[in-house]
Image (cartoon, rainbow, N blue to C red; front, side, top):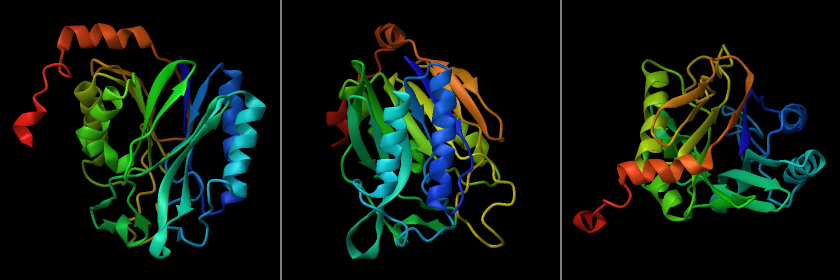
Length: 266
């Protein structure tokens, strides 16, 4: 399966960001990608109050993504904000395109490194796995990468890959943590891990802000934990072919899923 990771930098204006999604999706489709993955907060970057911008999944912004997916014949996965209870929003991944219509609300909220996502965002409560041409793909968002159970749940649901959309926070050691965690989650679940982040915006979100606005360094990791493709910090499109059959071969060799003893930890 050919996928594309769109490592771009979004701003605070959802309409301008939708134009970016259209441009990058067309580039990916021209390169033969079947699935095009955009970062977390593609609708509006972190550092922008999300509640005034949040729209339902049947709202105009999501419909704009659907229109782009239909026009290009691709499945588009993009981060947006949808309304939630109590004046908060959900940090949502929309997955839409021919034969696919699904969404995932981020389960693990980024209350770390001086930022409190839970102040404005309500946590999701369910995993999401989509089926593209008979290939099952799990969905995850940014801080989720620190929690192995989600990725194993994708594997248990039949996924051979997880699509991870992020807007990773900058700071000492954060790039190293990002790469280590992505590789570890691929090994934990013996899945392909396609991880796309916001490109490094340079100046960040302003003085004193801890908003995670991105560091770039998107990567594709094989089910054996090896890095197959990697980007730098700048905006760039990564197109990669995932060998679905490799997952079964790795699982036969390592057996980490089969050898689990979850009853020991209940």
